[in-house]
Image (cartoon, rainbow, N blue to C red; front, side):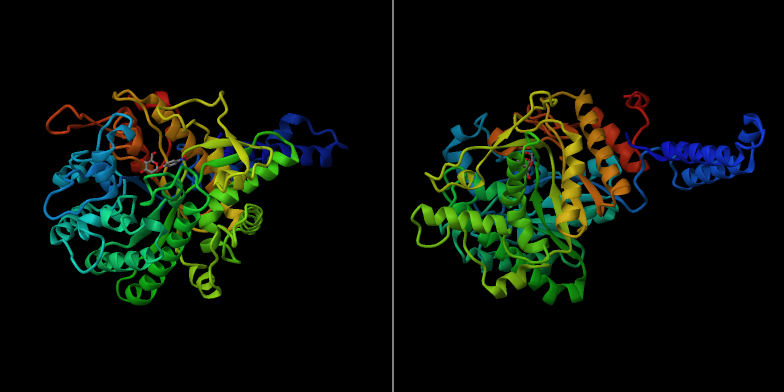
Length: 532
Ligand code: PNW
């Protein structure tokens, strides 16, 4: 895998050989003479030159200069300091305190990695990795204690100013996710994302971030993974029985509108003064047909449209609006189920226009792949599962990780990127998350193999297939509160010792691997050479 240049060279060489042989077969020139003929010499010279120019002999798999390597985190997962200096209560504070049994190890983010108190230390860790980009999120209730913009918590502004300034001092580009799931509880009490007014609240909150941080932050992402927080109960800021086909569509609708509105406000009021780019982060687990049957192929394409296209199509497609298949299936099912109108809300023509094209790049979270099989239609309950009407299967042969949903399937990454290239006219993509979990421990060769495999697949997608990917961000800088799995699943390049009072961070083997990648832009020829 990876470097195709030597193969191409051989192919040129062979073709030249054959051509020459054909032309000269009528005379008696022997093959040794032939080998040294000018034609061969030129062919070889061309190949060697091309390889050297592309830096492909010494370092076979290299990303070109300017390709960004980064790491990511999110506020609730690392900050701690849940109730200090004026911060308001988020839905995760309330959930973990009042229903700890919903969290695998009954833990919470009260202290987490203590990053609120460790700005300098954390930035040093990022610096040591040699990466140039840090993606982090802002805690809405740390800035606006009850979510509304009439009351700003100055300590929140101070804290993120400190983070941003420290990053810039160390030549690391800050990239902000405006909303990464820690909704102010006050807004949840008003219906969370099922409330149409949330779009206005999000605009006002974002405005405060642009006003205060926009002079130094040039990469913005509105939402992290609406699919996850709109579909799962407890994440959306509204009671939402898993997979409900009513509230989840309402949530998605308000989120997409909010995204468009924030983007347009940024474009009109801020970009002319402060510059910068804005995108949205959407997760995409590749969906491969279970078999070669037409049913399974159609099922996989339907699932892709329902799970990724739901959020991407309105923003990145040429036509805008929801994917046509989603529109027709949910409209039809709703009618059969006795709803007076579709469970999937409609955008007005003005909204379609406002939302279409409302992103400068697509933030992609990609971790894994699933097999998708057509199942018999079941329209008894109005759930999005029944709308999609497929079964998702994890192939037992795929290597496993510390998370049951995440198996190691690097080729799915290349397929994902190619699907996006085709569906949305080769959009500019920043890989905002990719990573895998282990248990605690510093020897994480499995993680190194995971990253290496996914980066090779990414390299093929970029340099063989022409996908427009500008950077790769590993999830995560360090172990952190992994939502409902608590601290039981570790995604960090750095291990965090939760037993130590200092919450000591120690680099894993994978940190050494990733440092080498980020500093050279190249993948090591062999993992054995890394001297781990
Ligand atoms: C992401 N999937 O969630 C989140 O953005 C992070 O906050 C989280 O810590 C990280 O992944 C690891 O879980 C995902 O099913 C949840 O493909 C589910 C999927 C992908 C990402």
